[in-house]
Image (tube, rainbow, N blue to C red):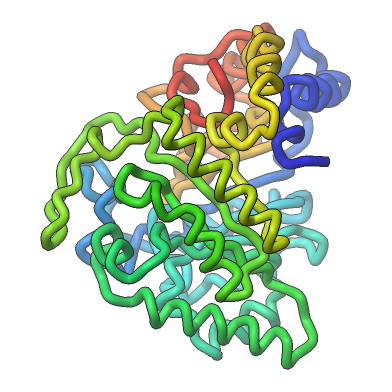
Length: 363
C-alpha cells in the first residue's frame, strides 16, 4: 500500500471503527494499554548551542536530564503489550547509558526505533544496536552539504556523520544483518528547500533505506537565532507548502527517490499532497475529508522524562498533558476524564483544541 494511503480518511475511519468495536464509541474507556509508545529518554544533547530550529531555545523547556530509573519501573506494566516504541525526545538518545538495557525490556516482537544526530555513532554503539535488535535508526541531518548543515545544526560534523553512516552499512554487511534500517531525515525550511533532491542522493551515498521529510511546525513562540553568518528567523523560514517552488521540489525529490529505489517517507499531509502524480487526487481527498480523524488517543502514548503523559507530540497548549506518573499510575491516566473527552470529540469528528496545530491531518 502506498505510504500516503495509510493516512487517508478511509483508512483512518477503518482503524477507528476497529477501536470502537473493542471499546465502544459511547464509552471510550479502554481496558487495555496502548500499543505504541514514545519515551523521552533524555533532554541532553551534544550539539551546543542547539540547532537553530530546536525548541531548546525556549525558556520553558525542561532542564537537561535523563529519564530516572523509577520512571522506567512505573512504565514496566506497559512493556509486554507494546508493538512499537520510540526512544527519543528533544535530546540525543546515544548519550543515555541505560538506552540499550531499556530496549531489552520490550517484547522481541516490538519494533524499536530512535532518532539520533549521528555524531556518537561509532563501532561500539553500532554493535550494541545490532545486539539489542534496534529496528530503525533515523539520523537528523537537515542538509545535503556541509555548509548548509553548519548553518542549521551549528557544527562541523557533517562529513564525520557520513563516515559513521557508511560504517554502519559496512558492519551490517559484515555481520549479514539488515537491521537497523537507516533513515535520514530533513526538517524543511526556506534555507534548505532547494536541497531536497540532493538529500535523496545523499541517502544513496550513505546506503540509507529511506528519506524522511518534515516541515517547520507551528511554535508557541517565534524566535531568531544568529548562527555565524546565518540569521535564522523562525517565522521567515517557515515553508509556504502551497507554493509552486515547494511542490516542484518535493515532486522532484520523490521522482529521484523512486529512481534510486529509496523509500520516501513523510507524515506531513502537505508533502503527501505535493508528491501526488495527479494533483486532482489530492483535491478529491480534501473534499472527502469532512471530519477530523485520528486514532492516537486509542493506541499511542508519549511519556516525558518528568512523568507527563501526552497522547501526541503535536499537541499544544495547557490541554496536552493528560496526567503525570509521579502522582498517578498509567492505567488511571489512560482512562481519566481528560483523555476520554478527547476520544469522544474525535469519535464525533470534532478536533480537540489541543490538536489545532497538528501538521499531519487536514483540518
